[in-house]
Length: 183
Image (cartoon, rainbow, N blue to C red; front, side, top):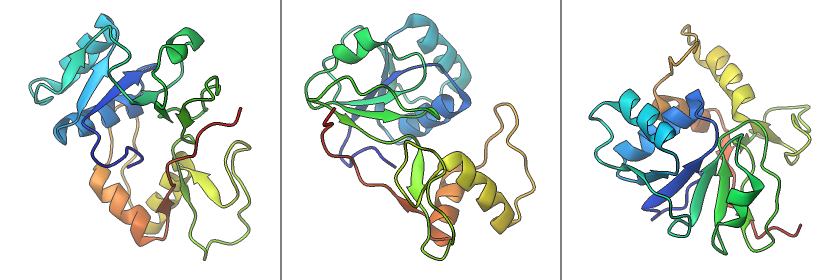
């Protein structure tokens, strides 16, 4: 939900984690084209989706066509430098990428604003602003609040829409798209 409204394609770059698979699948199902740069990544994703990617998963060697990049661990500095001016980097990993480009935008790692009713919260990670919590921590809180019994081990996942609605119901709010990097 950090991807700007109206986005029709994103570039995916980084290690293929459980989160990367889930986000890619959800975007393809919503009609957003997901571009990958490496043949092996394309094959792994395509195989896991079967025929369900709706032809929205594509492989390309062209970096410049995409203004929204979903990035994880293993994004190289060289790859980051190839992004066009104004590109928005949205991490799907727990740690943020190094901010190399002053002419690009960098979103925080997956995180949300905490509810005002939640007390004694400063910051859970030193790269996040005050009253902002990583989605990994929020997931644990939601499991307890909702009484969910399932465990997301391996590639098992809860319904993304169900989790999103529970976040909003309990007062967690999405973060705004960032302003241009000053670094």
